[in-house]
Length: 409
Image (cartoon, rainbow, N blue to C red; front, side):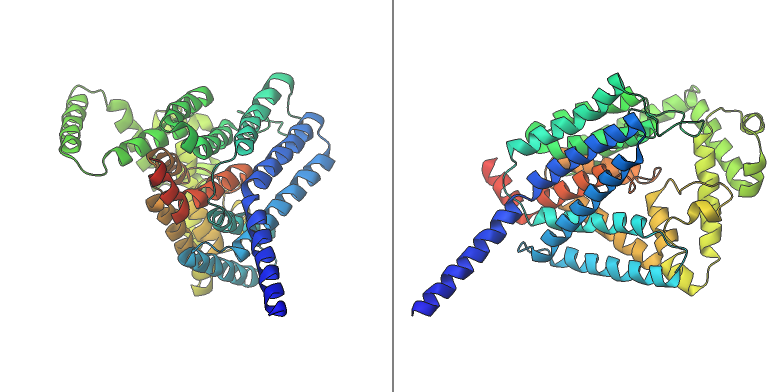
């Protein structure tokens, strides 16, 4: 009996220790992200690569921290665990198929999305005030750098719209979107107002359009009579706008995109900006370069053999293979082309299943902004933003969290 009692005590101690460690996941993760961004701040302020190495080391430690929680998770996450296992298997096979033409750090970033999500689901306890303070600190750091610093890392004509220690305002907009997503249980629909301000300050069409579409999309569900009335009014307004010529600029842009689409990517790459403006009649080149690049990527990917179709042409190889030396600027296409069809299917199932599992409207809307924004940017590269989005998405989709939220409501 004594041995049995000692055994139960040891089991209780192990369970308590496991629960205690899991209960610290978000506090440790958010604190780690603050430390990481402080190092990034110093790296861009001084230009010393030592701080870049240290920040990358923190990233690896946080990924290991999330992987540990994903492995010991007691929360029921069977389907998501299977998706993680499939992603690991397919990514590993892609590495073997493309040995020598595969960047392991990029693959680790992709797989960490799954592990952070599962780790977040394993810790569905209440939000801690210390987390909130960390998120505020994460918001303050780039703003502080904007005031007192000037990056010594991002220089030259290839970085025309640097914001603080971010390479461009698109990346900065995503960063603040991730912070708003994490804060959504505290602030509810007010984070959507903050998101519009975010897009306006960054002066980026992408985040603003993604926010509008996301809010409109989830305003339609559940379907109500008012929704059909709104759709009818929108259709009437659109027809009237077209009739009076208010949509002429949009139609010109679409026609120009169709023209660019019909050209060979190498032809467009050899044309100067002036030639493109004369050809299309517009000065907005970003959409054209994206479509040209996507067409080139698809041409390369679709011409691969069965092994290449299934497992891609290698992580981070797009810029080396395409006419334009750029990453894809479309994360769905990136996963498909660089990691293969099997990984692409797993990725799409994973990210979209989360959208339908989220119940809180503000969180669902902010997460949908990310899904739409995946279409035009390289978001997987942004470690802090991806960590926040998928860790908190894991927590917000946990059955225990949703049960607690419904009880509170």
